[in-house]
Length: 56
Image (cartoon, rainbow, N blue to C red; front, side, top):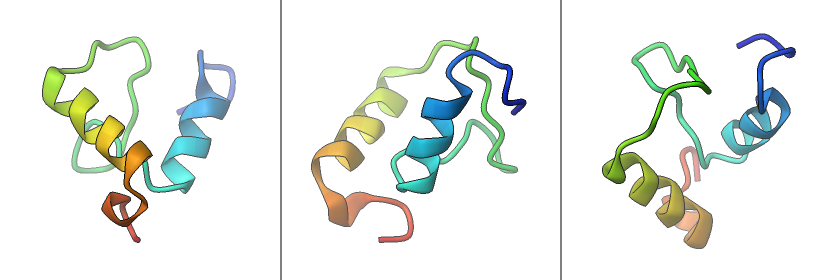
C-alpha cells in the first residue's frame, strides 16, 4: 500500500497493533474494496480482545 492511498496511515497502525492482517495471503490491503461481515466481525473481535490480536 502506498502512503498516498486513502486511510494508509490508519490501516498501517491497525496492522502494526495486530488488528488487521490484510486481504490476501501476502498481507496486501485494498482500501477501496468492501469487507465481508466475517472480516468486520474479526476486526471488532481483535479491537475488543487483546488476546485475539495477531501476534498476541
